Image (cartoon, rainbow, N blue to C red):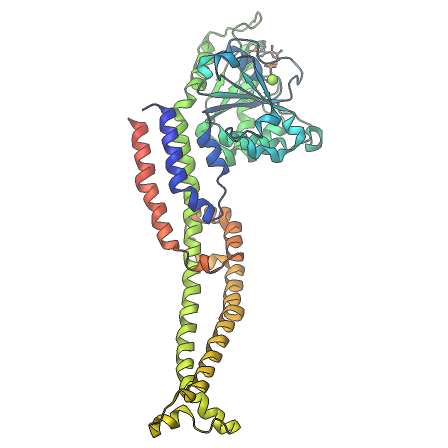
Length: 449
Ligand SMILES: Nc1nc2c(ncn2[C@@H]2O[C@H](COP(=O)(O)OP(=O)(O)O)[C@@H](O)[C@H]2O)c(=O)[nH]1
Ligand SMILES: [Mg+2]
């Protein structure tokens, strides 16, 4: 089965089995939905003039993107192939964010400024029929959100979540000292894309005057990268240059194949699509599972409370049934004969039931009011101020997961109603488990084939 068909099947399975649980537990489904409904994607980001657009033109085989030494292009451009007839067609951001078939509706929130800097270009390259490449405005140094008019990092983060490969480009002139690049590597990317989905590239190496110049730039980049990632080990960095580069003094023979290797990496990114979606499912389902566990624990506490109050009020109701009449007679002088007295004399009539039933009603109303107005809100309050009591967070992993879901759990508790208390959380837990053990496992098996 081809990857596209497999993705389609996975989409159906997730919609049928997981989506209802996502909405029940108020968990955001948009990222998963976006990934499921669209083509494999490669995102190119990096410093301005690092050669992103040049690389794209090379991959596509035509001058589809403008290139230049200064920050020439300040748009996010999706490049893909639809039909041969649509080649050359350009779709503006305003249409992209309103098209339900595309995964960009959630990008509306970045505002008009972003939308006017967002477009899709259809090209005549069939190799891009089942994938898309996204070119991005270069990262800048002294830039604020106001300069761009939208939250650039938030856009990068959202697109990176959609991407099967993020190509992060540098050049020897600015080997990683750009402020936005720093923020992207340090904060934005780790939240949006797994390490295995990022490749580092230093392009334009032909512009180094000598090998020592190249080594210095490479060293600077490595040093900066380790500062940004906080890691000691340096990932593989592709050292490349555009094949039609100018005359150079440098012997580039050790790196002649790197451009082709990078190109291959880009064009094979789609083969990891289903695997990446499964990884995302795994991650998100773990959050869902913990949320479900927390709600199950809450529901248990609420049920214990209800059960205890039911036991107490049943005893109170029985006592009220037999003694209300007697107590009323002793205190107020009526009824003339209480139920107990009537029973002893063996002449019980319907009239004797009035006081017992009134007593029972009073007990039921009082218990219900007590439970719903006092005990339950008190329990809820206690839990909401100490939500951790719902779960045992005995590993770093669970604590990390908890941080992500804590707000959502609080919201669920805030809206807690009978549906949440008797919501079948345990059954949902086993549904989730079953989905991971059967459905997800089956898809992992399928992609191995
Ligand atoms: N010598 C040389 N110039 C390059 C190379 N790649 C890009 N350029 C030039 O560098 C400038 C910036 O490239 P561009 O692709 O627009 O960078 P972007 O801002 O990252 O999209 C352009 O003038 C390109 O012609 C390369 O490998 N070698
Ligand atoms: Mg560009």
